[in-house]
Amino acid sequence: MTKDTTTKYPFGAWVYPDQKEFTPNEVDTWAELGLTVTLAGSIGGSEAELEEFKKYLDRAQELGIKLIANVPCLAYYSLNAGVTEEAYEKNFIRIYNAIKGHPALYGFFCGDEPGTKESLENTVKVLKIQKRIAPELNPWINLQGSAAKEYTPDLLGGRTFPQWLKYVKEETGVDYYTFDEYAQTINDGGVRIYLETLKANADAADEAGVECWATLLSSAHEAFRIPTEYEYMWQITTAAACGVKGVCWFRLYDRKIAPNYHGSPIDEYGCKTEHYWALMRCQRRFQQQFGEIMLGLKRKKTCLIGFQYGSFPIFSNKSHDVIKEIRCFENGLVSFFEGADGKEFCALVNLEKKQQADFRIIYDGSKASFTEYRLNGKVKMPFTGSSDPEAANMGLILYPGQMILFSIDRK
Figure 1 (tube, rainbow, N blue to C red):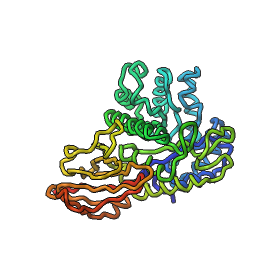
Figure 2: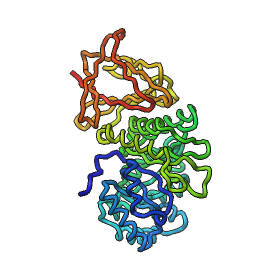
Figure 3: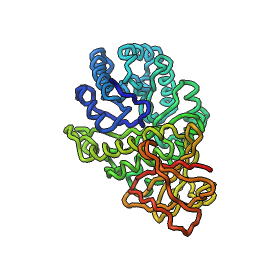
């Protein structure tokens, strides 16, 4: 019996090795790690490779996860190289017909970081062709994180970035995209860049009526260092609290011939590293606690506690009509959400990477009470607060990157 993946938070990874370097048993590793919607190994699109890929899909179905078919000739790169739309469509139909209808197939890879006007135009063409022929699938494109802040109307056909996202949705039917950002692993200045990128993309996605996913870092290279276990969770919770609806990790495997890339969950010899087990714990914990419930929440506002980092506003006594103050000597992030039934939620994240933070929420008890949600709402615990700023409220001591979720139950 297969498992349903529609209620699981999407976790994936960039899988750079070719499919020929694996066997279908590698899907067990992806599922063990906690991936739910992930790129598979790249294939050339031959009949033999597609037949082999079906074995990967079969195993994914058994394990309750979905795969994104990584066929580079179906990315926008082909149109950039001179392939006509007619030829591209014919090739897509051939490849799609070989594996269509498989319940574990999520969509096809459409390319990475289009940064020129031609690449962006060809991205739209590819998305449109794929969605028209395979409307049940989800074409997957990864944009530069800076696109939301820096892409000019000259690149986007005279549109702002939110307008372009809305145009893409209306033109193609694709209602989500992924963006990447790794600066959070450099230093505090990188954290500022990261939060600015989260805000720009989350705001643009909200305005356009689409979802955004994030490609975050699990593999060190250049100025980007290996994340700690705390920092894996920090990346997940900060993204989710800012409205991001899926995470894809760069990257899962170290390359044999790229020595500057290191510290991946799986090393160049195919061995699971200590980072594999750390990431596995973080993904499983988040999935168990928040993976289902966060997918159904609509972000309304995000504020920072402590240092502003030049992005979201600082929380103040004017930020919310119930919460008067959030006291903490460390840095934090708080977001407010609305559920499908109109219920209001509050997510609080320790924004520190190395130290615990003690948060104290002062709120107006005559207006509302708080209920903590654990295990995706299967466990609900009353939270004791006070309308008296001098009262000894119950402290919330969160480890680095830890998130806590409340409903705000208005009276």
